[in-house]
Each structure stands twice: as C-alpha cells, then as structure tokens.
Image (cartoon, rainbow, N blue to C red; front, side, top):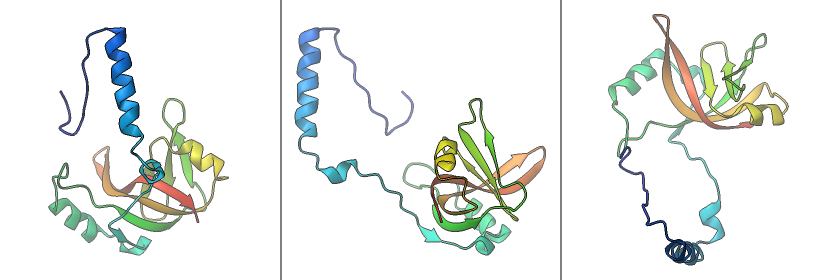
Length: 151
C-alpha cells in the first residue's frame, strides 16, 4: 500500500529461498555500471534572488497539484544569507537547517550536518523547490532545499 511508485516483496521465511533471492538480486546488480550509483541533482531553471517574486509564487500555485507525472518545479539559485541571523539548526536532534535571507527563508531537511561540515558559509548555491510556509495565519516565501553547495 501507499505510493504508486513504491515496491515491496513478501517471502516465505525459508533460508534457501532467501539465499536464492539474494543471489539473483546480486546477479541483477552486476549489470549496473558506476554511473548508476552517481548522485546528481537537476533543476528546471536558474533564478536570482530578485526573481523569487510574489507573482512567481502565484504562477507556481496555478500549476498545482504536483505529484507523479507533474513534479514540483526545481530551481537553482545563488543565495546570500542574512548578515545577522543566517540560520537555525532545528529538529529534535538539530538535523535540519533553516536559512534566512532578506526576502525569504530556506529549509533543508537532514542538511544541518552538511552545512556544518562546509564551515557555515554565508553564500550558497541552492537547488530546491519554491514553496509557501504558512505559519500563524501568515504566508511566507520559502525554498525547500534538495541540495546545496558552498559558493
């Protein structure tokens, strides 16, 4: 059950069958080359911070709903963080990071450790999805980060 692109398997709890399954999975994996294991991030359009306007958000909202067959648009953008408060580490174990700029915020789920390893840069190259953060009756422009690099 759940998502249409999810996959699962059920097996009879038999050691011999499990070993056959493992061997067949490994045989199938032998056909994969190194490229199959490379991680990459792609985007639809590159924007500057000043192009992240209310009008753009309205146009994106008109494209909803997003999902299988209609993915959320992904943008690439150079970002300069605010001079004062540039970020917060959030989440139960501070595993997420929220970034602040003059005009919008960014949220990076499970990216706090990476940000720390990059020595807390103030300029980032971000790939993510524009979204709205609705909080206490107000709506704020936000980017949900898929990945970033220190710029």
